[in-house]
Image (cartoon, rainbow, N blue to C red; front, side):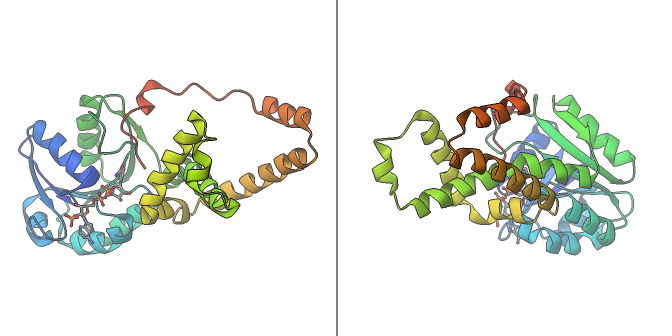
Length: 267
Ligand SMILES: NC(=O)c1ccc[n+]([C@@H]2O[C@H](COP(=O)([O-])OP(=O)(O)OC[C@H]3O[C@@H](n4cnc5c(N)ncnc54)[C@H](OP(=O)(O)O)[C@@H]3O)[C@@H](O)[C@H]2O)c1
């Protein structure tokens, strides 16, 4: 199906641009659109049998509503949104086309798909799902099929919890009254790494706020988090280092970080 033309709404930047380049290298005709450049959404819908929505989360639903009704049954509507429950439901409501939710778990600084995780959420139809899966696997991606609910629960841990901790660190540092310059002479390599991550998060407030606050599965994670913080707080305030160490031992070692997670950071 190399004669398939792929349209990417949001393909002029970020992860959409990255996939546009990738699909072109694989020999597909790719058409991209952004807010100010490229084909219009009706032109993309008329020309492309595969249409991917890759715009910021805040604009995703509106774009799905605009493009969905224009697609025929034998085409594919897919999105790259980092949260899947809402976007997959919206795509199913907006179109008669086949629907697949897709979340590439890497960012546009990644050199290739080789070894990278990609989640596919099957929603309607088998044909384009298998086509998408084959295309990704052929390029070396590690593809996992999951329901949108499972995906968002995992993302509450992988992205929500991680970014929540970073935001908490940034807010705590700010409230401590110490300026970054006064901390510099006292900083360690680990602290500087965490500060750099916090800087990245604070530079894109809307993106990271969306990943934390728009994930409906965060409620359960927050309950566990608060419970654990209370356990830790008690031991810290009591100066009970042995008790704290026992708690850490209880949780056991975390699995090793696989190599493929080191490059191409997704938000
Ligand atoms: N970046 C990542 O690491 C990453 C990884 C996995 C998934 N995602 C998901 O991919 C999606 C895009 O994220 P991104 O980081 O690639 O975003 P981005 O860098 O901000 O790029 C967004 C693209 O969407 C276009 N756009 C912005 N607002 C639009 C609107 N209202 N209507 C139509 N097009 C619009 C932009 O076009 P112009 O600027 O040319 O107008 C650009 O082409 C998000 O849902 C995100 O959750 C991102």
